[in-house]
Length: 68
Image (cartoon, helix red, strand yellow):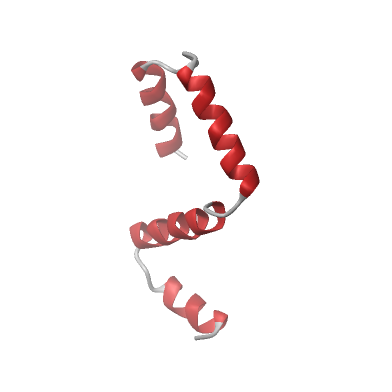
């Protein structure tokens, strides 16, 4: 299947389906990216040391993302 054929099919997807496809493609790119993996490890270590956000802050960040 060509890129042009894929694009034609993607245009027909519902918004939620396109979002799932975009998420899948991003995950596919990140899974073998050593820089992404290293960044993730560093962030997890920071969280283990207590560098976290409260549920209130998380919910506000989430709400802000949903309004974009």
